[in-house]
Image (cartoon, rainbow, N blue to C red; front, side, top):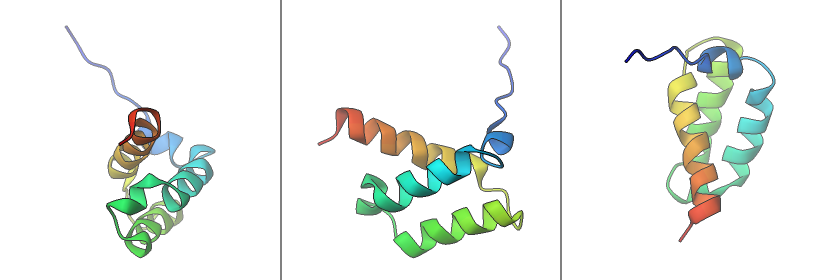
Length: 71
């Protein structure tokens, strides 16, 4: 079996970054992570300073999972 590349960096470089920002900064992720640090990661990623796409996608998935299956 062969895997395939997932274009996470491209997704989070476009339309998904605004949704990611809204969900992560207003969601359950802040129960576990510092809001300023999450915001810094998003800002740096969006500005192209650093590539945090994999970490941000992990936080996004965790937030969606928490919402669906929480507590």
